[in-house]
Length: 405
Image (cartoon, rainbow, N blue to C red):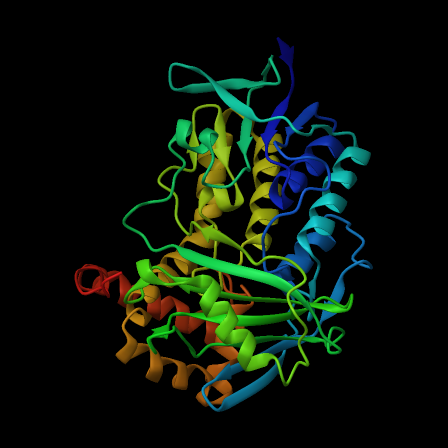
């Protein structure tokens, strides 16, 4: 049995951020990653200004990432190209950084800071009653006063702790590929909000073109489970349909690899418990309106360690309160709104409103950039507060009348 101050299951952005802060504070921390060093993670690769702000806070060198200055939104025949806003909280630029490079860089920084990392090593919680007292990994047992779950919502560790997706809440599916394009160095992400499936049904989701600055673009599509006919949705076909739309304007080449799909949890039944807490995807911190969660993973990972350092005996309660105040209202509103746009007859006029005026487009930009939370000032903050209150009352009706998946 080996003793540590902190154990982390998962070496994605959230786990790496937690490991960095813990190691810098002098804690003896071990990270367990079931994949090899340099493993890939299926993702859209986009970093919002919020994510860039978190990376800046961690002191991460972003010179290897491709800078992004704004978002081009397309809905039907309407196109709006908007710059990321200048705020006092977040930088006015994002980035695209393919996950196999981003995740490798972050965990290497954590190692340089003093964290121990064990690759190709799946860790599972050790329980004493309902309390997590450590993990077993590679035939060894490790003990620590706190274990951080940072391995997503699909694994056995999450199931053992009850940190699974709420079956009554929406989730997303997405698929992406890389393809060559001469427009690889563009400084705007592109999002097509008016997708249709092979049967012509409007899709609550979007298609994206995220230029990586390395000769390629990350092309993908995502959809919410609230859409009509979701269970029959063919993601590969939807991606091909979208690729056909953007092939000429982007001079898009053939996929460089086989398209890969993944599930986006967007909810969590339980994110804290005796001896453990969950961060990032494992805690359901995914924006239902864009499927993005890297920024939330980074922030929740840092917040978990900060609360542990400040008050180890009350870390779970303090962490749960802090992340709840920061994220819950916005993410809850997004989940409820996804029931509305699951209806085709509501999605189309909703998209027209979202990009119809400059003011509405600015709010849509803030939503797509994860720039809204409990402290957001201005029109975007006011709209989200009103939406949270309104949709709370409408929630029972939204669930009863949701589109048939």
